[in-house]
Image 1 (tube, one colour):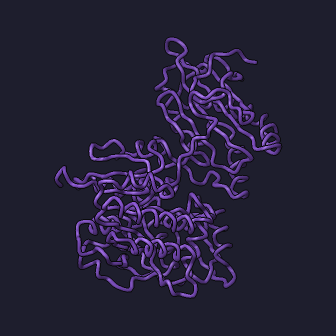
Image 2 (tube, helix red, strand yellow):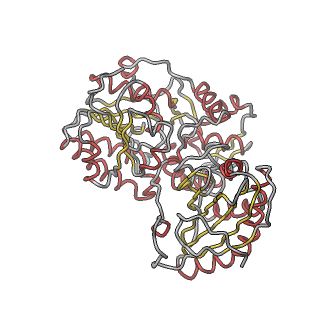
Image 3 (cartoon, helix red, strand yellow):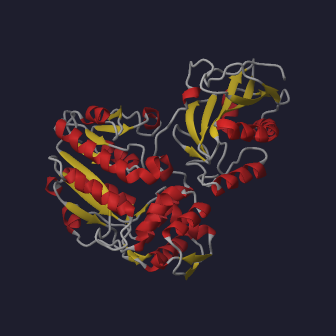
Length: 517
């Protein structure tokens, strides 16, 4: 354990894939941790969010004021922020600006050390990707500041929920025969997420790492073809048949990945571009400074698969990004003056208490489905995928529990007030913004009103046309969803699902018991 008067450790990008796993590791070692992110709610919903050793702070790398407040008083800074999800194609400029802001804030606030996780690959290689160039630029910017910097360069990270592992897993599980680009034979040196975390923590505890750049990798140097074979073996699948072709560009590869896996093309393309050059460690000094047992590719995959089967995926690539509350959905707002909010609501009275019904509410989506009209939901998911959206393929982190910020198919969990309210914001491609609210409100002794309320802020005439074209389907689906939820909770309906028109457009009031109109 460490002294309580130590300077706190700042971990940026706290709800991201790596940071979300590093934080509990540091807490368990007795460090005081200041977790920085753009959503206090998302951080609070994490298993570590209310640990006595945690301090949650708002911080945005594009806002120097918030960075100064987050860095103030901290010793070590873990710079684990990447703008690829939030800024998409403009991530390179955003990352350079963010790195420069961090250099300034760290210097102004007297930080002792910055630790940065970058990408592995020869920056001079003729096929270097924009993504790896950007990762290298961030490291160079951090190094040019007065605060000592340690840079760790990693290739593919193998762990449950990582974008690279999810791409590998879904392709291997869904495609017994693959038409692959030439880079399928490119050598790479993957590393298990547990080993990445070991190196990150070790760099803080070994001052001799300051001012140096280290390559980190596992014990295996393999081709991507080998990785598919290793995964298939560990997952009990036949090895996929691969047919390399010379014309499959990174853009085409990313589109194919988008169609087959939950990873959208905006993320898949930078990752695919990085597969066109060798990503192998050129030096191994870190292994002497921070010795640890390095997992083989097979061991890392087996551990990841075990966590997926046991629903113990701590963080996922889909966790990253800002949790944005639509302006028109805030509590206490009067009727929104920025546009017409369109609504469709259905309610039914069910026998039982809120806790009984909440079990079904919290399990909506993913493998459970939506309790009715599954074919229509799947069709909507396919439409979203082919229009560039995430579709239903993301599923959900756990079949049984939800937390604020979780991805849920093409929704994101915006608010939870168990056992009464679940609010989802749509992340599908839409001509507008949409919310779906599920409410369980007391309606007398041993009875509750179960309510579905959809609200939509259309973007122009196309948004209006979209809403009214789908309105009959909403009516059909919502009424049957209510009945399906009640059946899943093994509670009888006391009234048939009935349509109602809420008189309030904001999200915070439970709908009144209204007559069918």
